[in-house]
Image 1 (cartoon, rainbow, N blue to C red):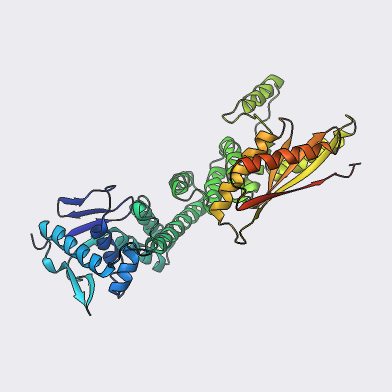
Image 2 (cartoon, rainbow, N blue to C red):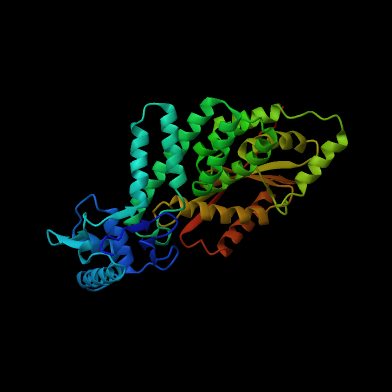
Length: 402
């Protein structure tokens, strides 16, 4: 079986086959010989030194003798491949550096994807572009080497492939939306639904998704999905969706069917109050809604002999180094939970910026806000993050609204 074709899949997990024989099942643990195979195949088009291979496979001094470890990994890999019928020279030394023998046939899913992408980029005719986009999206199945996602050598390749996937998704959607046909819009919904599983915070994909829903006149779907998406963006990024998405949401709201039965309205409101995330503490809302509620509460506070107090709660790193986006999102989520559990059920708060929440309290006396601030600080200290991040709290009394 010296002419065995090696088939290697990297999307959805590393899988290695020689002919009909599976050498490494998808999802199985990847040892160093198989990681070496993936590294050599994914770097076939550029010269790589043994030092670079060692740095990639054994990060931060994982082994005392990386050169010896590389030699052992090559030996084991050659043995595994030879037992499957591949030639002994499938891994050779070129200029005294290990590399994959270009004369050994191999079928690599990423190579096929990149070829389709290049062909699609070179096409001028829209229908041909759409054909290549569809072919690319059909073949893109799962994350790139998910079990090696933390390896430094994998990250840039995964990012480059992800960008190509996103580009193919957006180009296919734009071409389909331009056709302004029911079937094309439905295909956009299908493409975006799958893409959002892989890119859940891509506003560009959501914009195409909602544009297709608009073409399909699916106003109820837009009205029900948008608040969920807006809250997710506020939780993860601290920002609301952009004006184009908001415009589609407003379009759906303005075109909502009118009803003449007050009992139906009451039923809708009751259902909204019994959703899967009932309000148990303070009420969290988007900042645009917060502004409207602020005006209402300030106007009514005087009549009820109450006072509205604004608190701004922000994160400050004590280590002198800014938090990463992922760390910030996690800490802000914890801070949100502290605020929800500390404030009363009638209080309202919103995400104001990447690392700030704004709170609105209805109190009898302005000094009562100091008690709330102290409770927030105690809750923050109890969460265990106060060693490297602190919270700053400032208060303000709104001017009367006339």
